[in-house]
Length: 263
Image (cartoon, rainbow, N blue to C red):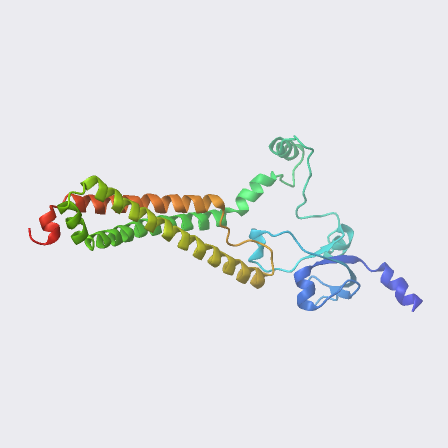
């Protein structure tokens, strides 16, 4: 027993990702074998900690498991002492990352230093393409919805031809009829915005629940901000008023006898 305890104390400690621990049912204190290839004998190690990595959009789709080792233990496992692929340098507050990277690159060769902002921009190219694709879809959807809304308002106003004719016969001014139809269009646009916002929040919640469970992450896949809601409501109101104004103007310019079907 004493010999087993002494041997365990000499084994390296590793930290494994919480998703890996859950899938393989590992706990702190378990002994695992680490190897660079399936056919290699590997080395034994003890799980010293289980951690949850910060949500990262660049790596969540890869669904890779991660293990953290002390640098000497990692070098021994890889058989490559005094060699690393990459490492990070923390700067003091106020220090320029660009100037520091330029000084490091001019000081020696065999490596290249990049500011973290440049690395983030390079790794975000895929998301920029997806964002532009979504923006194009949004523009097409807005144009299609504007045409659809205009058609609905025209059909709805056409149903009010007889009412408009009666109001014109009894002396109601065109401006009053135009204002009433415009107010009705605004109410329809606001009601549609409220329903659309509710559907958007429900769809976003379902999307986050599904993909967070699928990828076992806390990353937010669908985010609806107050600015998005405000822009959507304002756009809906503008389109609704525009469609209502066009339909109402077409109606009030028509002669009462034509609206009544006698002209």
